[in-house]
Length: 240
Ligand code: DC
View 1 (cartoon, rainbow, N blue to C red):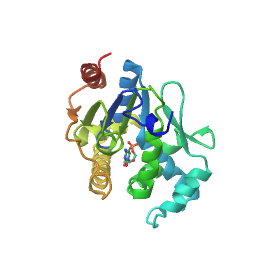
View 2: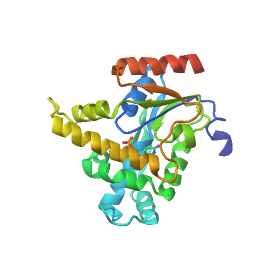
View 3: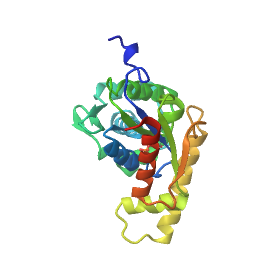
């Protein structure tokens, strides 16, 4: 089969795109939706985090320093940065080793918005995302520009959000805070607002809702309700 014939849209599998701001629960929701539907889960943010991790370790990425996209991508290739399918979803690997934990440190989180704003990095990531789902494979892909740029032909596009306060609270709980302190909540809300601002105002592929996406506000929904709603939408759209 020619490479072109394997491209999404012509490869037989279904695509569900879930976009939205930081900490809206996209990845965990996408994973649960994928499990419910028997699709594979593909977290595009993980690949941006992977590039950032390589940059922190080998590519001169430090706070305040100018970024060199070519050097970053050269290192990403040299260090074997890739997403591999593990039977249920795609995980980030470096030189064949899983890097799922290393890509989620506060250091990587603080730098990833700047790295993901580089057009060369976006093009590199997009090429890899588009090449991943193998022929016939159905996927739930989450990110910021999946329905607008990466897979505009997706069968269902969901724009998932929640109030900044709710997202901050969830993020703190995710990090293990038992009782959420007001000062921490304020700080986290401000950090998320800054990341939303950076992701929505960048020149290339800014975070925005696709015209044909379904908006889903999860502020007052439980995780299970949020997942069930997307599964319901997916079944209505693609059957199964
Ligand atoms: O979803 P996340 O927090 O793991 O994403 C990490 C960063 O990557 C986030 O700051 C925005 C960026 N990103 C992006 O620009 N486009 C995507 N499709 C996914 C993530």
